[in-house]
Image 1 (cartoon, rainbow, N blue to C red):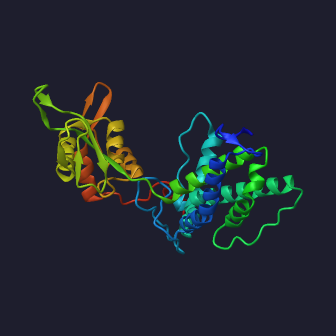
Image 2 (tube, one colour):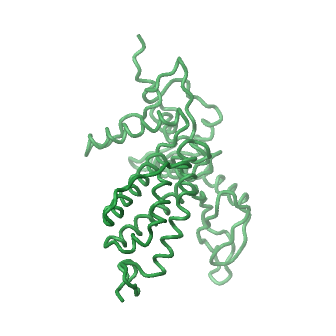
Image 3 (spheres, one colour):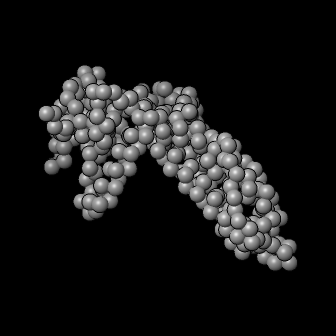
Amino acid sequence: MSDCTRCGGRATDSFLCWPCTRSLTQTLRDLPWWLARLTETATGDTRMSDNAGRKSARRYTLDGDTELAAYIDPLPPRKDDLDKARTQRHKAALAHALAAGGVNARASELLATIADSLGYWCRVVAESRGRQYEPSSSERALGANHARWLRLHVLSITAHEDAADIAGDIEGHLEDIVRAVNRPIRMLDFGPCPAWNDTTDDTCATNLRAPQESDTVQCRRCKTVHNCHRLFLDLMAAADRELKTWEELVRFNRHLPDTYRTAHRTLQHWRTTGLLQPREHHGDIPMYSWADVKRLQIAKPQKTATGAAARRVIP
């Protein structure tokens, strides 16, 4: 008898106990199916996104009149590390290029990383048994062949001194795939609960949050059930009355539903070109009105190219 190197339980002539071995076997059995789903996400066969919270990343269609440079974001303002900023921009440019062909860059990179990791552990386990690992065809998804081989050799994994690391990596890969494939539910903030509290002789004021598609939300404190549509209308009405700093305006815009939100770069363009003007100043701090943003949303005043497209030199 010995201790399991993963959970500390009792193991028999191996580095993993029976519950950990059973969990690892089930994970390896499920992994090929999840790798196939991640492949679909990477190749654009599903409505996944590179940015959590949005319904679907916009696909770019390139034609003979549009250069790829028009879709490259400007250099991020990172004064502390210019090399890191350049790397960030290069990755964004690659993501745009892949998106033009319907490829999700983040999912594609994750798929390659997991496949390399599984292949590495296959070689480690095989060499520990004095064998040479010869991978079979991956068939449905990249890395699925490695997962199948590892499942057939689970007992060899449990006998390896790195069994805990192998099991931890494999289960971590499955969690990463599930997060990439299953887009997180977008939560909306509806502000303080307006229900009256007789004990405090004031409103409840507990912050209300609910999934974007919910019709109702129940306050966790006073248990009052509210209509989400009514709460949202009240929130937007209050936003029209209250002035916000630029940071508050950007934060408020970022947490709005997709149909009400304005692209951050569009907001910046309106501010830079003077289309969005502060209503007043509190000391040296300019204060903006959301009503002005809504007016610009309706007018759609942007007529010129922005970003890299604006900096192109036309011969």
